[in-house]
Image (cartoon, rainbow, N blue to C red; front, side):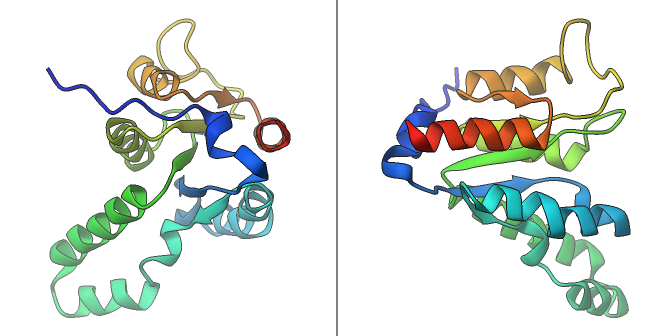
Length: 170
């Protein structure tokens, strides 16, 4: 049976008002309004308390265009996935944006990977729609990975930032 490493307590990551490296998992880079919110509100709010690792900055639009022109989209997509996996391995925790009728599949995969590595995972779900099984904020397995990693799901970005501030102040 596989057992993930025991994640460090969240308070330990923020000891002495530290700002741990944090992989930021989200689908926000796929749309124009999402990119604006991500760049102008989401990342700056997180950067007050963590050192964000932005996967959207790891692979540039010109690289995707060149791969498409060269007929190597699949190979490049695998390379992008490896870049993101390496960035997760280099982080101390993960924060995931969990809004949507269904949580974005890539974001869910990143949470699962980080949890399996023993990283604490935090989520933000401000969506008023229900998703997942009864009594769950999201899919039960995804929520279980987050809770078992020592993390939590906040109901808003403001709530998440407030909880991060409390961890840094402790």
